[in-house]
Amino acid sequence: MGMLEGKVALITGAANGQGAEEARRFAAEGAALVLTDIDEGNGRRIADGIAAAGHRAVFVRHDVAEEADWREAIDRAVSGFGGLHILINNAGVVPRRTLQDTGRGDWDRTLAVNLTGPMIGMQLAAPVIRDSGGGSIVNVSSVAGLMAHYDAAYTASKWALRGLTKTAAVEYAPWGIRVNSIHPGQIEGTALFGSASPELAKSLRASIPMERAGTPRECADLALFLASDASSFITGAEIPVDGGYAAGSTMWMRQQLKSRLTDG
Ligand SMILES: NC(=O)c1ccc[n+]([C@@H]2O[C@H](COP(=O)([O-])OP(=O)(O)OC[C@H]3O[C@@H](n4cnc5c(N)ncnc54)[C@H](O)[C@@H]3O)[C@@H](O)[C@H]2O)c1
Image (tube, rainbow, N blue to C red; front, side):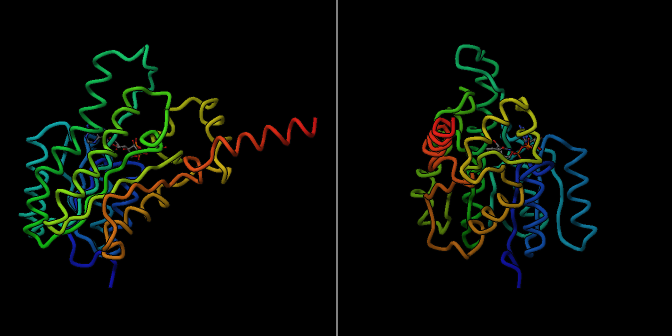
C-alpha cells in the first residue's frame, strides 16, 4: 500500500521544480493528481509522463491568483476523481527586489501569487476536503518566512503565509483537515534557485551548516509526510527543510570566521 493510496491531491506550481517532484512522488505513493500551473507546456508533460507510467494525473491551467481558475481545478478533482483530500500550495514567485526598489506592481503580484492564491485555495478547497472525509493542506513558505531575506515582497508574503497557516490549522481542525507550512532553504534544480546570481547563491550556500543546497526530492519527501496519515497529529507546524540554515546560520558563519581568523 502506498502512503497516499485512495487519496486525491491538488498540487499548484506542479510544472517545474519542487511541485513536479511532489507530483511524481505522490503518484508513486498511490495518489490521484490534479496538477496545476501557468506553465502549460511543462505541466502537461509532467502529467502525461505520470499517466504514461500507469498513475492517475490530469493537468489544469491555473493561475493561483485567479478565483475562477481555482474553481475549475477543484471541480476537476471532484468530477475526475470523486473528491479531494490534499492541497499543496506550492506555486510561488520571487521578484528579487529590495524594499527600496519594490514597485507596487511587484508587490501586488507577489502577494497575489504567494499569499492570496493559497488563501483562495484554502477557502474553496477546505469544504470539499471536509466532505471527502478530511485531509491535509501543505503551504510552501520559505526560510524567508522565518527570518529576514533580501526580497521585501517575497519575505512579506512568506511570513504572512506562515501566519495564515496557523489560523487555518485551528479553524479547519474540526473539519478533520490538518494545515502545516514547510520552509525550504536553498533548493537546487528549481527555476527559483536559478534566478539568484551565482554570487548570491554562493554566499547563501556558505551559510548553510550542512554545506550544500537541498533537492526537490527532499522537499517532496517532507510534503509527502505532511500530506499522509504518517503525520496524523501534526497541524499548525512550521518545518524548515534547509540544512540547518534557519537554526544556526549566524552561529555557523561565526565559527567559520573564527577558525579563519585563528588560522591567519
Ligand atoms: N527553490 C528554492 O530555493 C526555494 C526556497 C524557498 C522557498 N521556495 C518555494 O518553493 C515553491 C516552489 O518553487 P520551486 O523552488 O519549485 O521554483 P520553480 O520556479 O521551479 O517552480 C515554481 C512554479 O510555480 C509556477 N507559478 C508561478 N506563478 C504561478 C501562478 N500565478 N499560478 C500557478 N503557478 C505559478 C511556475 O510556473 C513554476 O512551475 C515556491 O512557493 C517557492 O517560493 C523555493
